[in-house]
Image (cartoon, rainbow, N blue to C red; front, side):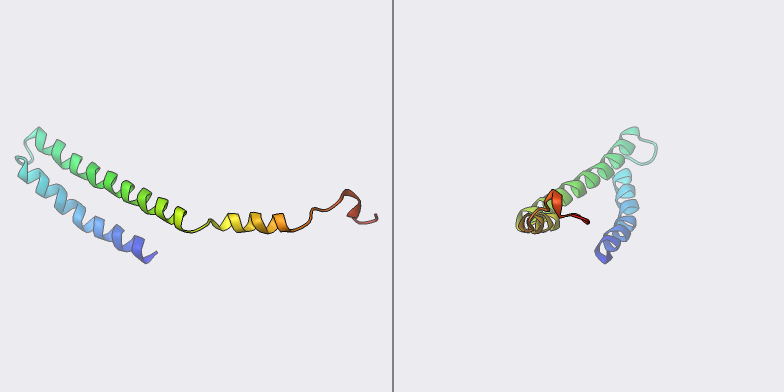
Length: 89
């Protein structure tokens, strides 16, 4: 949770600075293409974040088995109950 908070607060700090830098570099607040570039920069950072999360999630899934797989394997080892093994049988 601390890592998520770190990146969240870091993004909140860097986001407006990046947006303003792109806006100023492309011509200021009166140029339409400057606004397009600034919002495109935000979109690029968002898409990069999604790509990184997908990549790390894919690496984690291939490296370690899922927790549910262990439960399924444990159930397979237990003999199934027969229909006559209930109470009163």
